[in-house]
Amino acid sequence: MLTSINPVNNLPVKNYSEYTGEDCDKIISLVDDSFEKWKVESFAYRSGLMRNAAKVLRSNSEDYSLLMTIEMGKPIAQSRSEVEKCAWVCEYYAENAEKFLNDEIIKTEASKSFVTYRPLGVILAVMPWNFPFWQVFRFAAPNLMAGNTGLLKHASNVSGCALAIEDIFRKAGFPKDVFRSLLISSKNVKGVISNPKVKAVTLTGSVPAGQSVAALAGSLIKKTVLELGGSDPYVILEDADLEMAAKSCVTSRLINAGQSCIAAKRFIIVESVYDEFEKLYLEFMSKKKMGDPLDEKNDLGPQASIQLRNELHDQVMRSVKQGAEIILGGAIPKIDGAFYPPTILRNVKPGMAAFDEELFGPVAALIKAKNEDDAIDLANRSIFGLGAAIFTKDVKKGEQIAKEKLDAGCCFVNDFVKSDPRLPFGGIKESGYGRELSPFGIKEFVNIKTVYVK
Ligand code: NAP
Image (cartoon, rainbow, N blue to C red; front, top):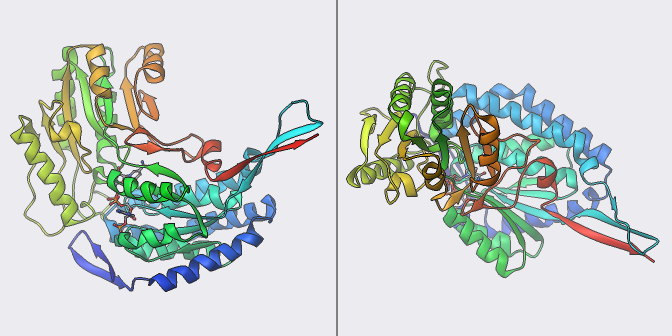
């Protein structure tokens, strides 16, 4: 049984019966059968359906937003933005997929040689709860447009979202089995990956989940894309606009109650401006209101579950034992639900939980650096390499540091890191490999086929 629990009050919302191995095999066969027809449909036909999906999303935005907020606690305004972003990614690939996947002529001694991009077949997506619609659409829009068919194993706490997404594609007019959800728990993912009809796997989630899925897929020579955790460093240089930087850093730390892979997690500030930055950061963070995510006055709701909230608090407590100091929050509130307040830790250093681990919640780690070089060194001292940001009024220098010195998949200058359908998204090191979104994302699960005509 998979149960959705409202993290606001820790009460069950709905139970869902888990699909058996037999149910899954049946669905996989249907999705595989539908590939044979889907792969030869024209881009124009697929684009029309993908645009319909955007319309379905927009016209039911309130229902989908409410569903997300109830299942995982996201502030309702952020749920609405998420639905809109899903519509955007559908339209983006409806508009551009054909252009991205056009045959490419390559001049050789042949009378004609070219590269053509052919779909692979059934692709499995193992997805997390934190952006329960967006994570799925950024997989589904490019892959369905490329001619693949999709299987979704969503996180066990957002089964309502999993079924709603399957229904969106149906309402949009997609053939019934081009995209299906499998309501299964993580222990049954093995059976799905091992099914010969499943050709590749993408996973967005934690490092252990990525390791397990990639190990099995690798043993079966099935390609994987992994979008894993992060501990994004935000570097504040001496000449930064401190007020703008502090505001941007607070926003990025608190989006989705801090439960974003690309949330700012470590703030590395050069010594000469440390005190001023800390003052501003504390001031802005203190103003943020935690409470019912359905009340638009609140900036953050609960964490997604009591267990995740308790794990976060344990990381805070371990950091304190290791020498960090709490200057805001840091205590579990005496109210129902999975709430954790905006929290600031200072004196954070390598070797502490708040530096070495991913803190998936509204907890900021302030780190003092001796100078610019030290700040960059500290930023890169992480097992992760997903996003990074640098704040400086010297834009040329910022650009050079972003390009050459920060070890991350996405580096932003004077802004917080965000995903955008037009830009590639993904990490290096233990943040994973492969890219989603943009022309790069649509080419992850295609056969890059060479054709040579003598
Ligand atoms: P998670 O526990 O790893 O779960 C993610 C998905 O993987 C869920 O569907 C989960 O199923 C499944 N799963 C877990 N262990 C598995 C295993 N051993 N084999 C197969 N499937 C397994 O992660 P989460 O707590 O949902 O999400 C938070 C993590 O995701 C954070 O680390 C965050 O940084 C990362 N994330 C990364 C990105 C990115 O783009 N890089 C984006 C969002 C989130 P169950 O729910 O059934 O356990």
